[in-house]
Structure formats: C-alpha cells, structure tokens
Amino acid sequence: MQDDLNPLRASAPAQTAPSVAPVPWRWVGERGLRVETGEATLGCYAALAAKRFRELEDVVPADGSILLVLRRGARPSPELLAGLAVTRAAAEPAPATLHEIAVTYGGAAGPDLPALARRAGLDEAAYIRLHADAEYTVAFLGFQPGFPYLRGLPERLHAPRRSSPRAAVAAGSVAVGGAYAGIYPAAGPGGWHVIGRAAVSLFDPGREPPALMRAGDRVRFVPA
Amino acid sequence: MIEVLRAGVCDLVMDRGRPGHAALGVPAGGAADPDALAAANRLVGNPDDAAGLEITLAGPRLRFPAGGVAAITGARFAARFGSGGQVAWNETLLIAPGDTLDVGAAQDGCRCWLAAQGGIAVPAVMGSRSTFLPAGFGGHAGRALKRGDVLALGGERHPVRRLRADPPAIDVASPLRLVAGPQSAWFDDRGLAALFAGSYRVAPTSDRRGVRLNGPAVTHARAELPSQGVLPGAVQVPPDGQPIVLGWDGPVTGGYPVVGAVITADLPRLAQLRPGDALRFSTVDVAVARALATGEWSIEEAV
Picture 1 (cartoon, each protein chain N blue to C red):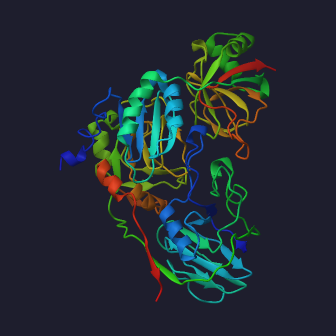
Picture 2 (picture 1 turned 135 degrees about the vertical axis):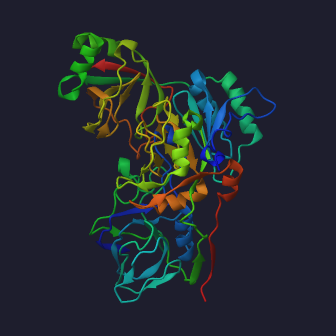
Picture 3 (picture 1 turned 45 degrees about the horizontal axis):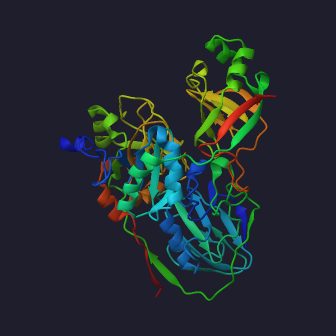
C-alpha cells in the first residue's frame, strides 16, 4: 500500500527504441510522446511533419520539445522511433517567411511600456529601439490560435509575467512574457506585459493557411 | 430543420473535432465523448462524423417543424416531448411534425449528445463542424445556441430503422486512471501521496478548456518549465498545487508540470463530472491504457 502512494517513482523512465541512438521521450497519456528536441526543435518538427507517419494524428512543436499525438489505440511504430533519432541528427528547418509588423508603441496601445522601460533601465525610446532592432524567430504557436512565441527578445528586455493577468488585452497587442515576445491574435485575458499594438490578422479560420505565422518564421517589428 | 425555442446552459454543435492543427495553436476539440455522439448518429442513420448537439447541465427546448428522427446518448436529462411522451435514451426517436423536445436538466452526469437525421448542417471550418468557443469559430456562428436560432439539417431523408444502443459500462465510483509523466519525477512524495490518496472536487470554474480541481495540494519542486505540448486529459499542476485536468478545448501548449494524463478510456467520465463532484486518481500503464482506448458501443435493432 505504501507503494501505491508513490506509484510514479519507478515508472516512466526515458524510453528509447533499441537499435538507434537514444532520443529521450516520455509518455503524455497513452497517446502523447513528448520528445526532447532542444535546439533542433524546428528542424525535427519540419522533418516529422513531412514524413506523415500513419499512426500520428498531430505533431506539436513547443519550447525545446515536440509532442507527437498518436491516433487513438495506435502504438508508435519502430520506424517512428528510429525516425526520431535520425531527424534529430540531420534536421534542417523548413524555409522561413520574414514578417515585418508595424507597431504603435506605448500610450493606450502599450500600457506596460513605461514600467518595462524603467525595469530595463531605459527610456521609452531606447526600449523601443532595442525591441525593434532585434530579429525574432517563431518558436511555436500556442496559448491562442495563431499566437506566436517569439524567440530573440534582447536579454535586457526579459521580464517575468504580470503577477495578475489583465482581464482584457486587445487583439494585436504586442507583448513581452519572460524571455519571449508575442502578439495576441484575439482579444481576451492575458498575463504578458503589453507594450504596443499591431494592426495585423494573425489568425482567421476561414483563411488558408489560417495562421499568418508558422514555427520557424522570422519577425521584425517596425515602429509605426 | 430545428428551431431553438429556449437555449440551454451551453448547447454546442459538435462533431468529432479537427485534429491536426495543434501547430497553429488550435486544439482538436470535438465532442467530449466522441463515441457517445457517434452512437447517437448511428441511431438516426448518420455517419459517425455528422454534427450533433453537445448539451451541458440543462438543455434547450427544440421544435421540429417538419418532424424528424433523433437520438440522445450520454447523461440522462429530464427530457420530455411537447406531445407528452417521455424521451428514451440510446434509442431512435421518431418526432412528429411540429412536436417539441424539451431536454430539461441533467439527472446525473453533465453532458448528453443529440443527433438528428441528416446531421446539423453548419459550414465546416478547418475541416470540422465543431464549435471552438474560446476563439469563437466553428459550429453555429462560433457560439452556443441562443433562443431563436434555426438549425438546418443536411442530407436526404431516408427510411428509418429503429435501433437501440447499449453504452459501455462506466463505473462512476472508480478512480480516474492516469498514465504517469512526463514530469512526474518533479513531484515530491508528499505531493504524489496527496494526489493518489486524496479526494478532489470539481470547481465551478471548470469548462471544456479544463476541469479545475480543489483538494489536497500536489506539491512539486519546480513551478514552471518551458512550454510543452499537452493534450486533453493532461493533469497540469500550477504552483498552488490544485490540479487542472485539461479539457477538449484546452490549450495545445502549457508551462506547468504535468504529473500524468487521464487515459482515453476515462475521458468520457471526465466529460460527465459536474461542479462539486468528487473524484480520485489512480495509475495504469500505457499498454493497459491503449488496450482500453477503443471502447465500443453495441447497437442493434430495437424490438
């Protein structure tokens, strides 16, 4: 009975296919495989998505890992497990699009800019320059449909998320959360610091493709 | 055609969902118990993937001006026909022209699924007719039904076979089964003991995005991790230790540690939990979970 209180300790080690270089992965339920991909995430994602393994229903890139979602009742094939190791070694990201996004910084469009600039020890103009001079990469989309997690925020501008989320963040809000920059596709609650707003449609389910950006794309912010 | 004379708490047009778009931030969604919706569809002669209604806690009053063929599966509601008859569950229902169906309040459980012959004819969005409420698309205008809505039915009328479905047995008292991981090793002994020995209650703020639980705190060493892909059933534990079981319209990525995920076979039970309900957790290994994952309804001619 004591063991029953702690049933997870002995289970779920990193599992690997036998005859290939080990790739750490873990179960998420019986349908999810969380694969550690680290710096190679975008390349692995492109390679795995292109291979269209029949047992997979979805492939979800995230921050340094990929979730493979198996079809209900399916098991991972030896080809899939072998493919993980190969793609991790040889993965090349898919060709990327560069998006230039015009931003109205500060004021009503960016209510958190003054506080964030102070935190970074900069005046607002210098903060904006630093934010707009950087080139960002879409690490993955999540949180809301089409919401890009943008890597490349200068370290000086990193800021922990707001201690309490805002009840309403406007669509198009350009925001900072931890080490990430992002843009809210739709209005709603949000815990990131809002520094500006862009007039851009990031997600439209009636459009093909529905999301403006995809993982691996590059982004530059242009002060409007 | 179906006219909505009175809307329920949250009546949503649902089919089997739109898997394959998580990389765009869009979850698969779809009926919380896809087998129950599929069974309702079969009872009216529809393909499994036709759109029906997912009805939560208290249902709508619907009018069928031209009559029709319908079926309801899932939790029992206090449903009645306007013409006076009681409404049988898990059976083909023949509805006379002009009759009304008042689905009423849930008697036990939380959700039921109503299929109508022809299926609810709303446009497919990203490959599915399911409503995705958090972003307001799919289903009927991207929202729950309102009084005055009119739902068109698709397809042609075809002869009706009266059928009866036999749902798989569900033991509501047994614990929800989890497959451990991926961050189970981050949790300390006290936290894991709390999770597996404790009883949790469903918080009123629960919805299709997540079932929030209140109970013994599930303590862990690290509060946040880089965002990882998650799926329905994943049990996220925020710093306050109160677990959240991600639902069908939950986010596709999350930054809280995941102690385990409810197995596919137990997601229909998750769908029937209502605020205030108590539940417990246990673990099971992947092979067992996979073997249980394709539960079948049996459907036969009604006598």
